[in-house]
Length: 138
Image 1 (tube, rainbow, N blue to C red):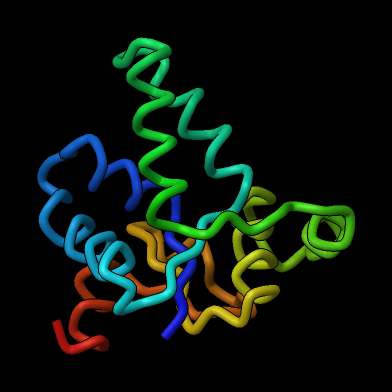
Image 2 (cartoon, rainbow, N blue to C red):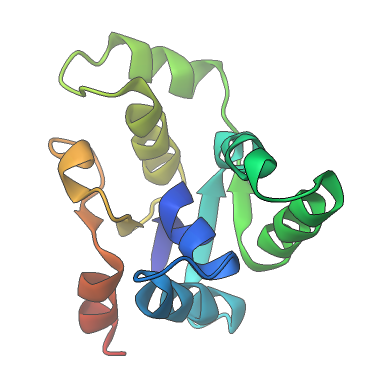
């Protein structure tokens, strides 16, 4: 099984955000243990670095991101993905559409996110961490 993990789920796990930590961390652990092939879109990394700037030092942010690199494979964001996302008028949010394009490019079975509604009508079905754990059997 292959999944693209949304930024919010990665952050929930790696910085212990409550009340979302337990389920998000269980998803990330499945990826870390190679039980599930996990991906993150390249722009997730820049988004994380930006979001964490108010609460973490530069060194801490780099350490967190290096942990992501050791767990998830990073999907490149290129011209084709960006072009398909920008002309897709069915998606309300451009960034989420780019996530969907990245998930589709790697043949992901699901996008694991806390914001399932943001991915309605996408190429890849979105599920919450809780729902993914039930689907996986964990």
